[in-house]
Length: 97
Image 1 (cartoon, rainbow, N blue to C red):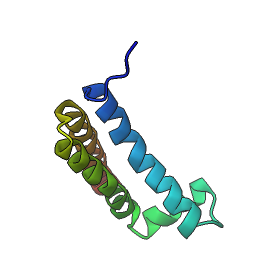
Image 2 (cartoon, rainbow, N blue to C red; image 1 turned 30 degrees about the vertical axis):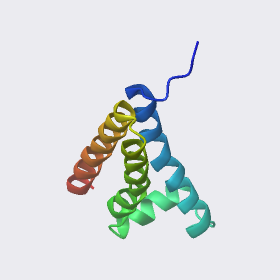
Image 3 (cartoon, helix red, strand yellow; image 1 turned 180 degrees about the vertical axis):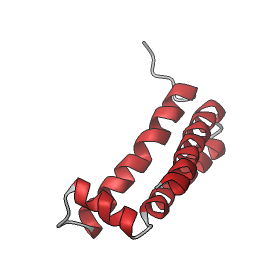
């Protein structure tokens, strides 16, 4: 089976995974002494959970523009869809937490 770069599924998977990897790197670099539950509690108390999540979505924009520049438009659609998914999660978290 030939690997196809211009697919909606590839863009959606990369669009979901890249912010998670970014959050993981921020966790390792900025908060090395915290456990994951402690970090989430700290971020909720400081009203920074949605801000951090929003900033970690920025690499998706870079990936989106790379896909647009290389004319991989279906992959760009997948990244845009996953970015909208994260935006909805941030919006819900902003008003419930």
